Length: 453
Image (cartoon, rainbow, N blue to C red; front, side, top):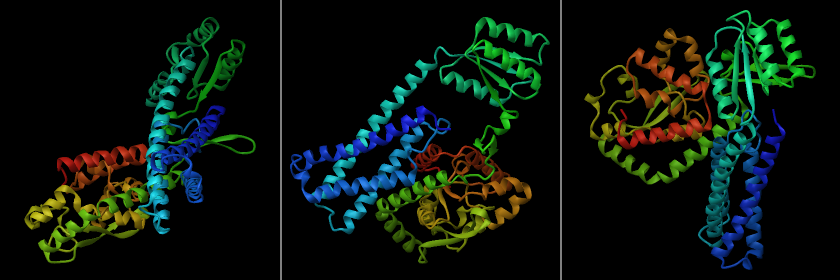
């Protein structure tokens, strides 16, 4: 639900970013052109207009400012902003290149403006995060709340208290009607004497007549009543409230990663990141190709069949590490060291063999982060062990890296594969762009210490 606060915050971000973008070009013109006099030339004004149009298109596609009080997180917004800025710069550079403007002052001006804009946005958003956290605690630090429930607390109950504490609320009382028959009378007396700002009622096991009585009494004491639905621990992973013409209803998203906006953000990130890796790593790509040709005297790439999203098969692209074609299908249950030479062992150990999979990402077969792509044999064996888990794994694109590969590396037994699937299930339950960035950083760390297999 969009509140007044989130609406103001969205507009603040929008206009702050637009002003920062245009101010960056003014400052860049002083640095590159020696002043703003030449910036009023027709060519440079066209560059400014083009940059603004591309920025508007990028924020429209990324949905950078379409958030509400439930989904807004300053850190996640900053990550999305950095990705949008990178996409904006790449598109602008491509347009300048196609127009033959690379390596002249317009391109130099655009790059300098990009650096200034990036510095502005980092400083502004970090400052905003600090101020918003301080303001939130300042606003809510005097707010007190009590809780009424009937039965044993759940994990969601603890998460709820942690969220209230983080927001600056103070817990002043918990009343469990299942403990003693006098809890109800004590709650009445407590509300009358202490007058907490909020009373949160856990609806599970509470009679409607009793709840109505509490609501009526709280109204006379100016205590706000908030109702928490039954089975909150079940709904906690991902539920939303929608409104029909007459009444609200809650729904659970049982299709993992099916939200159009989230899919667009993830796909945009995959494409931009893959292009950057393939362009920056092109010299390394060519060097590895030469090594593979000298070591195996065969084709550079190994094309192997995998099970992808919705059970569709695709050909995964890797650098060759063995003499045999389709070697992964032969080695996943056995030792691999007896048919790997020095080059193959190095590529497998450093995980550089997986570099061509960024091509799979651009084709749409894979994602940067996602569950490990399964072999047909693995899929057939694992479906016998856990049919439901496998269906969830196949609901998203497989990834180049995943929680399972980082935590457990490559497993060659059915139990090991099941362990990886359980790790990957955690990713499905808690997907976010921030999570993807964390897993990418962990993968880079794994590569640097040489723990691939």
